[in-house]
Image 1 (cartoon, rainbow, N blue to C red):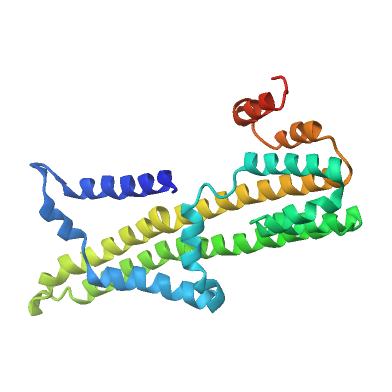
Image 2 (tube, rainbow, N blue to C red):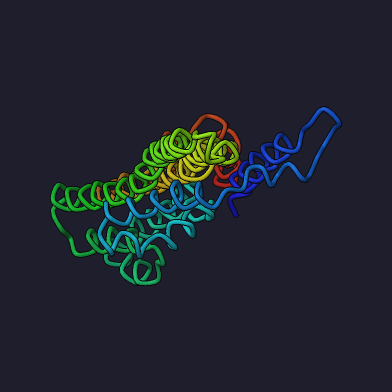
Length: 274
């Protein structure tokens, strides 16, 4: 569960709502109604969703539910898990040869990891095998960037439609400024629409779509790091690297705190010195 995302979003909306209720006499819950405007909802939210639908193919739109599943899952790609698994594979390969990895590869749940294991089990050329692995990483990262780009698009157009709503409100206000026909009574509502649409556009861009795009890119970075670790580990196993040396080599992909923490503890269990 991505608890920081949930806390951050709830806190942002909570602070905004409290700010809306602030008045000279203290908190006034009734003031929340001042920020509810159907016309603003239709213009800002409706048009933003419509433009996103018009900008992306159905296949990309159908993947939106899976984006939130990825966004909330922060435990799927743990570098230490893959490092330990690669060290285990290296130990088996040194004792029994690369063919002994086939059974372990078939048991692997991660499809990319399984593919990489099978590439060296089949005794493919090292350069060709690495080319296949790196191409898989590049294409996966490109697909992830396209997914994040959808929310970038929404984040970009939401403030624009907020401004469109502002223009609509101002135009209505000016058109109705005929005091002889009682048009002055609509000035308040028209001006409210003009300002509230801008508010909605900013909220959508910076409190909804922006954080989603950032989180998706963060998940992509985590996945790509683990995949690069897998590629380096698999190629080292194919070349017959020592398991202890392989662990130290793969730990260089991690930050110093991770090495001194989890990496150091794992090393101690294997007889390594800190």
